[in-house]
Length: 118
Length: 111
Image (cartoon, rainbow over all chains, first blue to last red):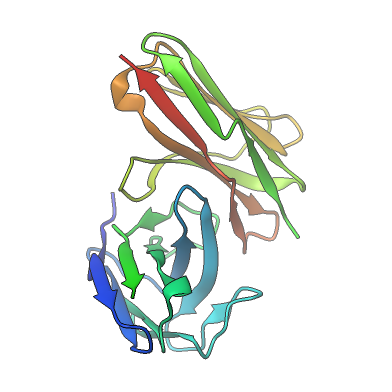
């Protein structure tokens, strides 16, 4: 299957700092990538849809100025958590599908990034 | 908005016993997908069901999509310790632009 990578896998930062997470599709081009957040023992919650070359689409309740998304190329999307606070500590996962995919198609998930804000 | 409910939240079984998780959507779905997430890992795609009443099998796993395309189930026959993890269903709305995850069922298998 398709491979999606994420970097870093772990990050610990101080409150108030910004953290950038990268999501890459390694063997296919992805015009659309999705960012999820998962709190311990809970389900995945879609945060935003990242669209190559255009603005991201944010889900209700997700602050776009706090979670900056940039999809600069067909293989890379970045999520920046600005001025992180302890409540932002979570497991952030991206996903992408093959070029023809909309939400209808198989989604391949990255390995996730565990963020801990002290 | 679209809601996807999954039951049970947790299930403890003895190795060798069967296991079933159920998924129900508040709206008709275009398709339903199933994922498995091992402890500490990320979700891994298992299967997608598209047709009304569809049944698919993967070894000991049987997936069903309801006739009304609003519910689905995953059944594991004779569980093994390697089946441990959280199983999520995820439904796509008819417009094809929204994938909503269920809350997941955490399966624990006692050897």
